[in-house]
Amino acid sequence: MLISTIVIMFVLPTIKPTFMGNYRALMKSIISLVVKYPSLLLYSSRAALAFGSFLAMWSTLAFKMQMAPFYASSNIVGMLGICGIVGALSASFVGKYVKQVGVRTFNVIGCILMFSAWTIFILAENTYGGIISGIILLDIGMQCIQLSNQTSIFEISPSASSRINTIFMTIYFIGGSLGTLLAGIAWKINNWHGVAYASMILILASLLVTIVERFISKHH
Image 1 (cartoon, rainbow, N blue to C red):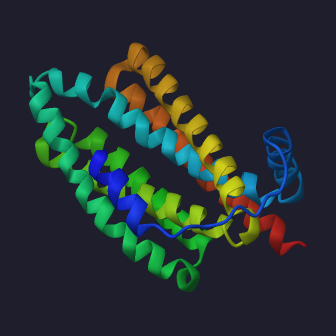
Image 2 (cartoon, rainbow, N blue to C red; image 1 turned 120 degrees about the horizontal axis):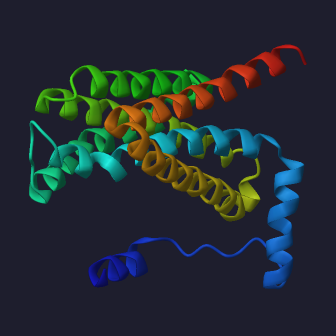
């Protein structure tokens, strides 16, 4: 953290605030942005639902890996996190082609990848190959959805980018918390399969938001 602080001080550019006023007025302006730009809720909600599915896996994976046939220790579960490197590498690709491919298309691709990941988690749940490939697909799908939506929100109002990102990330982590909560409930009901089905519902809900938005925009 100390090294990161030093790097930030010397590398990041100094940006002057675009908002003039006190903190209370700043918070009020965030609410006004939501009212003024309803598309913010669209971008944020579909990313949040997908993030809920993503965290549902990570919050229960250790429980799954402790069971037969794995009986894996926390070290093994931690090492599975290395699979996330693939998702991180895909981030630059997503960011580069958002405008060419389109945010809707990336959302559909992301949902398909994440739904496929959960399908693998069910069908090949007792193999390391199934778990690893599922993690990779889930991570890439999440990157497609998060980065395409987060990149798109900054075009709504460049002068209020920090406040817009505040709205996005707040809703995003509410979705993540919801996914973790549902995962805990689903695990008690039907263990890993319960988590998988709940997560699939979250992914379908995220996809539904995109489909409904496209349908509405077509008829306007």
